[in-house]
Image 1 (tube, rainbow, N blue to C red):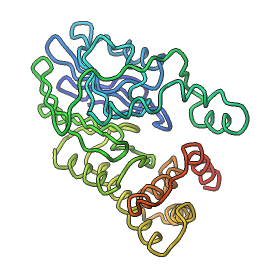
Image 2 (image 1 turned 90 degrees about the vertical axis):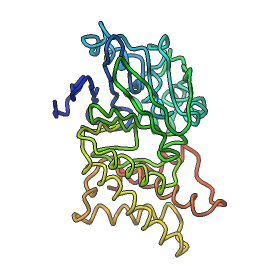
Image 3 (image 1 turned 45 degrees about the vertical axis):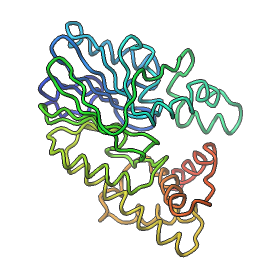
Image 4 (image 1 turned 120 degrees about the vertical axis):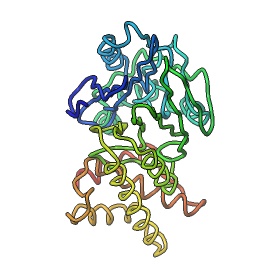
Length: 318
């Protein structure tokens, strides 16, 4: 198995490949390819058309004789589905919750935010300025499922397991039993803090337990290098820590953003925590706010622009 964390296609064994995009930060997601006899399944497209086309070109060595006829979108974030139009002739599968959520943040919205004048534009370009959202047509899944679904790809079985809501309203992992390989989508960020847009965190923790129970040799995360069950447990431990720390501060009556800043200081100052040096440190503000929202239905989360402002503020102080 190719364990190097470098840009491009990596063979992980038994017809399975990972497409990796270092450094795994905002928008630089991974994808997967399962090659069967005469056909292939693609796990996720990328954030814009240029990146997706580069990926598809790199895969042609495997897909020229086994073309991609099935695509799985693990969730609705654009860095996992905005390239769908380049594979629109395939059957595109996602969970029903993912399909519903996809239309909520169309590429045109990110294009407008990246072009916005003043502070808002500067803010979003600091996160997404590397990407071009013009000319992207949002192509939605052609088939949906809830719970579990099995797909046969040229003699290989791919099990789709819905584990959301967690990162988003609908999260799916794709498990290939005969290769002992699982593609997790954004249930796993390796080397960077996960971001819990939807939650609750308990669901995400349970999703990590599901992945561990599969006993895979190869775990391909949504962002970051290929890992194994240790990487899954590290993410679970981070989520458990944030859930505990945020819950106690909510009980004490602390404001959510104040709690996030305090927990951020606690993490960064504690080398005993395995996640103390993870990147995308500002995401703690979203994660703590999600805990507050899950504990109190009356809690009002800030709008997405304010969420990114808060993340940028914590990053700048880190």
